[in-house]
Length: 219
Image (cartoon, rainbow, N blue to C red; front, side, top):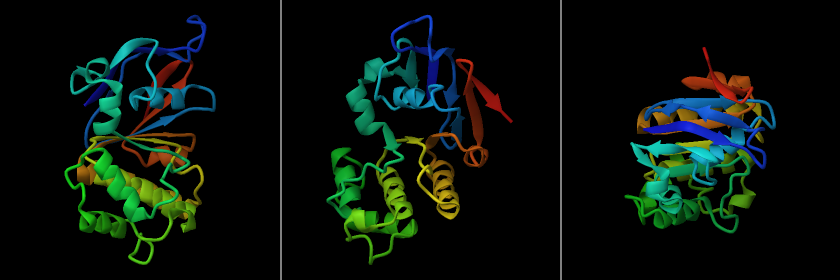
C-alpha cells in the first residue's frame, strides 16, 4: 500500500541527516509501530508519510503513485487520517459534530449519516449521553476515542498516529491500542503508530526502531 524509496531528511546539513536511504513497505490490514528515543526523527518520519512535510530526498508511494503526483493536499484530504497526541478535535463541537464535519470535509461515503456516526461512537464507548456534549467536557481517554472514531468514519485507508497514548493511563492505553488493531484487522486499514512505549509497540503486528539513522525491524 505505502512504501518509501531512498527516503532521507535533514534540517540544514545534509551531512547530519535524521535518517537516510529508508526503504520500507506498509500493507493494508496490518499495524506498525515506530519506536525511538526523543530526537531520533520518528515524528518527522510520521510527518512525511502523513503528507505534512516533504522529504529532502527519495519519495513516498501510495499504491504505486508518488505523493508528488497525488498532491499533498489531496493526499491529506482523502488518503490519510491522522491521530494526534493532543487529539486535535474541534473543541467547540460535540463528538457527533466532530465526526460529521470530518466526513463532510473528506467527502466520505457516509457523509451526512448521523446514525452511522452515532453507531461508531457508541461502539467505541461514547454513549448517547456523551455524543452531543462539548468534547472539552470529556476525559482524555474519551477524547482520544473520538479522535479514533473520526478516522473510522472517513474513507482513508492509511491511519497514522503520533504518540496516541502519551496522555493516557494504562487502562485507556490498552483500550486505545485495541481500537487501532480493530481498525487494521476489521476495517482493513494500514495503521502506523509512533510511540516511545515498548509495551504499546509490542501489541502491534510489526515493530521498527529508529536508531543510528536507520529503521531496524524488531521481532
